[in-house]
Length: 341
Image (tube, rainbow, N blue to C red; front, side, top):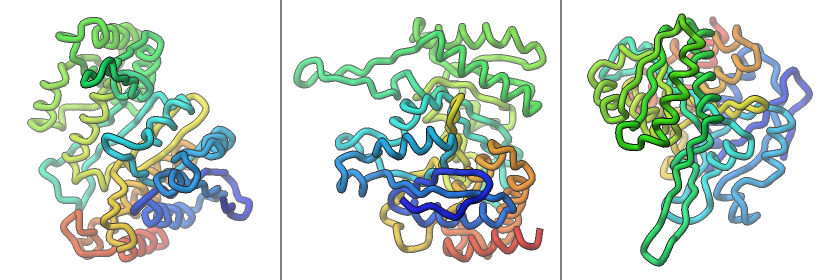
C-alpha cells in the first residue's frame, strides 16, 4: 500500500487488473487537477492479488473502504465459469452497497445511434439471482436461488424515488417479470408501488423486462429513472450504455448507507493492457460522481465539462469512439480543458 501526502478527502483507490491501472492513473490525474484535495490510499485487488495471496479481495481492502467510506475502483478481472468469486459482488455484499446507480446520458461529440438520452438506471445490488447463491444438487443438476426480500425491495425503491425527487426527475419505471415470477418479482413490484404512494410528485409506471428492452431501443428518450432488481439491472444497464456510445463512456456508482464505491463498469480488457489505448472516460466520469458524493459539486462540474470539451474534438477520441487518440493523448486533452476552463 502507498499513501499520498495528507489532503482534504481520504479515498481508497483500487487500480484493478488489465487496463485498470492505466485508466485509474488517468482518473486520478484528472481528479487531482479538478481543484479538489484528495488523499489517496492505493490498495490492490484482483487476479494478480489472488495468485499471490490466495484471495482476490484481501480483508484489509474491505476494512480500508469501511474506514474511509469512499473508493474509486478500476476494472477487475472475473473468471468466467470457474475460479474466484467476483470482487464486485463480494464488495457490494460485504459493504452493503445496495444501490447500483448508472447515469446514462448522451455526450456531445460521442457518436451513437440516439440523441437526447438522459436516464438513470437504479439496480438493487445485494440479492436476487445475481447474488450467486448456487449449489450442485446432484451431478449434472445445478440450482441457483433467487432470493427477494421485502426489506431490500423497499429500500431500493425508496432510494430510486428519493433520487428522482432530488434530481427533479418526473418518472420512475419499475422493470420486472411479475407475470411469470409472481412471488419474487411480484414482491419487488408491490414494494415499489407502496413506496411510490409516498412520492405523489413522481409518476410511477412499470414494464415487463422484455418489453422494456424493446422500448429502450425504440425510444430511449421516453425513460427517466429505471428501477430494477439485480440481474435485470445488470443487463439493462449495459444495454443503456450502448445507446450513448458504449461502456467506455458511462459511469457507475455502488452506494450504501455507510460506504460508496465508484467504478468503471466495463471489463479489464487484458488484450489492451500496457498498450495505452484504453478509453478512461468511464472511470473519469465515475470519479466525477465520487466528487459529487463528497460534496464537491463544482469540481465535479469542471471534470464533466472538461471531458465534454475533449470529446468534442475528433482528434482526441480513442479508438472505441472512432478516433485514433491514445489514452495519454486523450487524458492530456481533458487536463488542458480543465486548466483552460
